[in-house]
Length: 179
Image 1: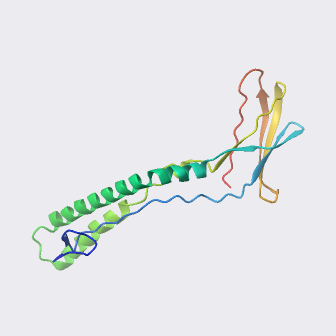
Image 2 (image 1 turned 135 degrees about the vertical axis):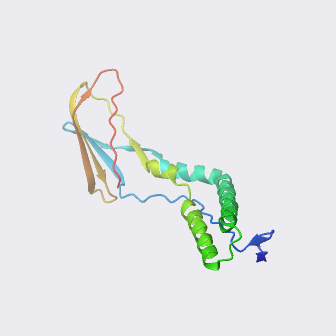
Image 3 (image 1 turned 90 degrees about the vertical axis):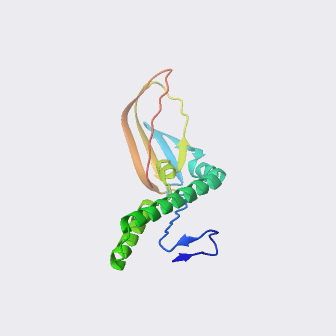
């Protein structure tokens, strides 16, 4: 039952199962090309791109790719070894080939279901961050943003009504859209 595979330099039992799920960065597409700002009756033009977080995430991933892949491989091999020993323990000295097959399949299925690429970081980050610095007199204003596609057509519109702008403070209003 021992077999040595050409790409693995040590003997491996037939029931040794390893699954690797390597993460990769794929930027989410966005229909938003620009964002326009209106405060009260006045239009203040388009917001400025502060940061393209997708590009930052991609560069960070590239810098850490070797370490990420190394950890993934170590984790997968560890699960494979644990799965191999679990199969051995569950089978005991059973000669029942159907039962042994079901044990192998069950442990391999659990290994398969628990091995996924780590996707936490990129899913929680915004794609792009836009800002606009506007000086206006203190008061109460309706603030509107329109998310525009590449043709300048509105995709979405959001309004904050009756926002109070105070003198000498940070008057920050946040908007977001999932397009």
